[in-house]
Image 1 (cartoon, one colour):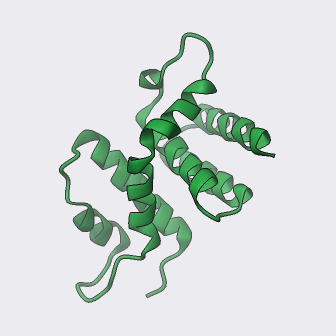
Image 2 (cartoon, one colour; image 1 turned 120 degrees about the horizontal axis):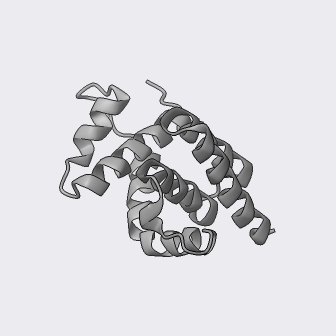
Length: 135
């Protein structure tokens, strides 16, 4: 079964969100459940790459996000879904070969599905600012 990159990103988001609450959670079980994998099907390689990459670079990603926050704001004030979406998108922007426009568009799709319009605009602004610094 072919699994779309969007479905992989959505599963990565859900896994990272769950890990924020319970770092000991069984990632493989989340992968299998969220992707509807049969026992003989393997997890797409890109999924653990995203999850492990975000976790490995979380401090760097958080520092970048924090640098874009308004004065007086900290990461702890951000809604958890927004923070996870930003970490995931920044990981793709910084550490993968995914085109910037694709990484940002995918983050906005996740924001549309798992957050609200205000968060959507906030995420778009943060990622747009970071992208413009890269160019």
